[in-house]
Structure formats: structure tokens, C-alpha cells
Amino acid sequence: MKILQRISLLFFTVMIWFTIRQYLFCPQFSFAKGKPFSGNHFYNPYAGIGSGSWIKCNFHAHTNAWNGLTNGHGTAADVWRSYDSLGYTVHCVSDYQKINSDFNTKINYLPAYEHGYNFKKTHELVLGDHKVTWLEYILPQSLSNKQWILDNLAGNGNNLIALNHPAIRNGFNESDLIYLNKYDCIEVLNPYGSSISYWDAALSAGKPVFIMGNDDAHHVEKIASIGKDCTWVNIDALNCKSIVKALKTGRSYGMHIADVPCETEANRIKRLRDDLPRLKEFSVSHDTIQMALSQKAVEIQFTGQKGKILSTTCQVSQARYVIKSGDRYVRATIIFADGTEIFLSPVFRYSVSPFAETSGPVINRTKTILYFLTGLLILSAWGLIVANSLFGNLVRRIRLAQKRRPAYPAVG
Image: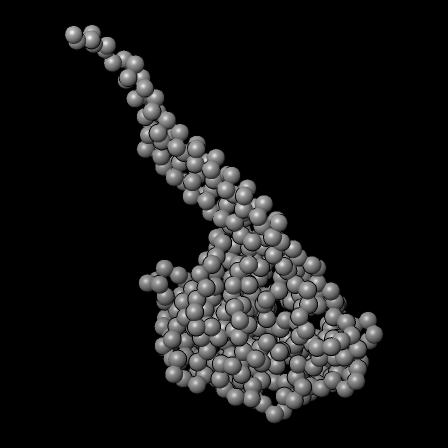
């Protein structure tokens, strides 16, 4: 009975500590609801793309790491070999809480890791950093928890932060994206679940964040399990700095690559290497968007505020849209005959600068102190309960023993 009692005390002590540390010892933020894009200027993420080159990338793949403790198979060499065979230029190894450096001498190496080891899969992809951030909250995270982690991941802003698979287990809610900042991209395309509505929620709140598509591969040694979702990036030079800058400014687009029934492995490899549709031209002149594609699309949709479809064009390789006075942002979805889809970065309004700092979350010092003091009070009270349970009986036994001690007559 004593052993069970002590095990129970230990269990509840651990749970109380994790709960207080996460919800009461974390800095508390004051959040302002995001405002839609506004202004008379239009930001074109693809301005001048003819001067650069498009590369196909996968930024999210796992290997056998941490002695098999995490979900991942194969090696970094398997990642590079498999993605090379499919014509990818950049293929990151993004193990949990670990930066793989096996190929760090290669020109197309990009340091990456997936941050997060919590129950709700609230995970972030970190690109371009050389040090892992270990701060984490394992229980379902509050908005302040999420923002504090993003603040710590962002560091000096030279790396890139993407919210991974937000729709999986609702690791992030759509409403979160209206308030959070310090993230650059959303992994909208993921074979385990797409998050298009999350992206529109962020854009509708005036957040200049861009799409990312990744395989989130856990079996890289199986060629059929990769090449599902990817990101195309337009760069001037093949290096980490150029790739991160292009992603942060939207010189990229996401692609969902369709599976073709009864396709041989050889034909699939050729299709993924050479025959995928591409964006050829994209311009914004005054209030008019124009684009050209390498292949005819079955349908092109222009989408705006809160995911509303603004216009649809069918069976074309070129499209045009005139931005209306009420359009805050416009993004295009392009659907091809085999089911492959392209999701372009948005054109959005701005006044002074498209990436001007807006009033984001700030630490509420009064609330943070009150929460901290409440946590200390709870811990102190629990400490007294534990001390009484462990040592109270011992004290009582000592006192009882003293009372029962026989009294000896005084000598002399």
C-alpha cells in the first residue's frame, strides 16, 4: 500500500509540474486579431522570375534517427538517392529535434529539422538553422505556448519557420493563424492531410505567409511512397540563403502530384523528372494578373478573402484576372487533366511595404507575473501535501513512541 501511495504521489507530482510549467510559467501574450491586407499597391511574388530558375524541392522527410525511437526508416543517403532519381534539386532530412549534416558539403544542402514532441502534433519545420531549439510543451498547447515557441524558433530571423501539417490532430486551429506571428510558411500540402482553409484563414487576417508542399516521408527507401507533394522555388543561386529568401518572399508554389493508375515505376520516374506542368510567366500590371503555363489546365480558379472563389477559367494554358476593389488578396489554383494541382503564392494589397511589421502579439507582463505567482502557490500547496503524506506518519509515530516511553525515577 505504501508503494502504491508513493507511486501515485510521484505521478501526480510530475503531472502537476508539467501542467504548471506549461500553462502558468509560460509567458502570457496579448493578441491582436489580424487585419485584412489593404492599400493601393499590389505585391507580386513572381516579379522578375525570368531572371532565376525553378527548382523542385522536398523539405520534410524522416530517416532512422534516435536509434529507431522516432518514426523514420532509411538513411540520409537514401533520401538523397531517392529524390535525386525523381529530379529534385533540394531534398532535406528533417528528423525530429535533430539536424542531419551527412551531406553538408554539397551545394544543395539545406539544414533542417522538425521541432515538436507533443501529443497534438503541433510541429514546426525549421530551415537554415544550425542549432536545435529544445523548448517544448507536451500537453495541448495554448495560444501563448505556441507563440512563445515560435518566438524562440525564429531567433534572429535568418532561418525559416513553417507550420507543419496543421490539420493533423488540429495541432494548430484555423483561429490560431489569425493571431500568431513569426512563421513564414504553412505546409498546406501533405499526404496525411491538406490545410488549404488554414492558409486562407491566415491570408484573410493579413498574414503574408506562403505555401509549402512536402511528402513528410517516413519510408524514403520506398520510391513509390515519395513524390506526392512538393514545393517549386525560384532562385538566383543554389544556396541556403537564396532558398530561404525565396520561400520567405513567396517566389515559390506548391504542387500536389497526382498518382496515375497502372503507371509503371519507370514511367512515373520520367513523368516526375521531365513532364510535370510548370509556371512559365506571371505578371501584375496595374490591377490585372496574367499567367502562362507549360501545359493546358483543365481549370484555373482565382480565390480571395476567406477562401471565396472569385473566378474560374477552363481548358486554358493562359489566364487573366482583374483585381476588384474589394479583393484583399488573390491566389490561383491550377488543376490539370491527371489531377495534378498547382497552388500559387498570393498577390496581396499593401500600403508602404508588403512585409512591414504589424502589431503582433506582445508579452503581457502583468498577466505573466500573476500566472507565475499562481503557479508557485499551487506548487507550494502540493509540496506541503506531499511532505505530510511522506513524513507526517513518521512524525506521528515518533511522537507516539515518545509518549509510550516508560518514565524512569530520578537517581539521587
